[in-house]
Length: 295
Ligand SMILES: NC(=O)c1ccc[n+]([C@@H]2O[C@H](COP(=O)([O-])OP(=O)(O)OC[C@H]3O[C@@H](n4cnc5c(N)ncnc54)[C@H](O)[C@@H]3O)[C@@H](O)[C@H]2O)c1
Image 1 (cartoon, rainbow, N blue to C red):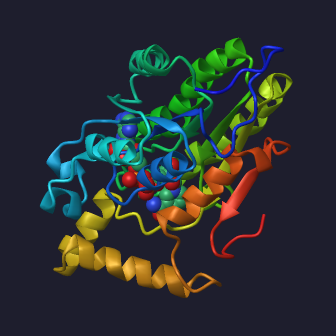
Image 2 (image 1 turned 180 degrees about the vertical axis):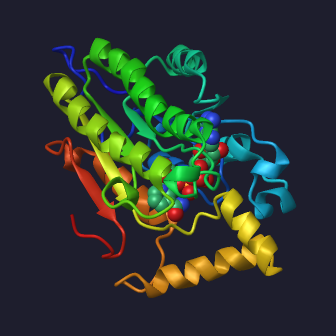
């Protein structure tokens, strides 16, 4: 727990000691969520971590093969670092579940200092020309990539304001928040919206010392599930992982720094934005893309 001064204010503790971070989409074996959880826990934070239950056809092959335990396993890793941890299953496309999830975190920890909106809709079904894009797919992408970010911000920021200790909200956006590509209408539009939400909520929450920023990664070596990649691999007669390997290689060739991002590259930026050194930064959208995009 943080130390309280005689004036009733929290005394500064090094790193994130005494803080509580809530990270969405944290169950992937190689995802940004897990890397972020481990980085923030390593800095001293106790962690609430959440993800949706996924069926086998919705999981990357390596997670099926290794019988990966999702947020339960990541939670055990957090506890091994000596931090408290609370895994919560929550489908972010269902707003009442979001409100309940935030209440559960408050019941367990009594505070939330850092919110990382990292989850996103499973990609692939969106990867079609706009004329072929199903409205259900568009709605699903917006519900998780945008509306859930808004609702987590709304519910968590209310608690942050009430506690009066300030806070940090970090939204994981994308290169696609700044530069769209063909067959990317739903993903890109939902991620562009996150930057608008980041800026507006940064201004609304600045009076309470709650800083809101976005991180915009380029391609990351996360082994995420993509229905499109699975179909492409099948058509080529190779495994999904072989096809993924080709994407990783071509990403490296298209990146000035000569490699694809690792999840830890993104987690490092999140950790900076969550920490004391970023106290005068709000409403920004930082690229973590090896030099692929400059604005
Ligand atoms: N992987 C990349 O190449 C890349 C590139 C740019 C930006 N990003 C962004 O980085 C973040 C993390 O990327 P990643 O590849 O680790 O993510 P990912 O595709 O593995 O998905 C993140 C998590 O979201 C969860 N999720 C999916 N549907 C959900 C639902 N209905 N409710 C709750 N959770 C749900 C998944 O289970 C998963 O654990 C995302 O916001 C993504 O848009 C990723």
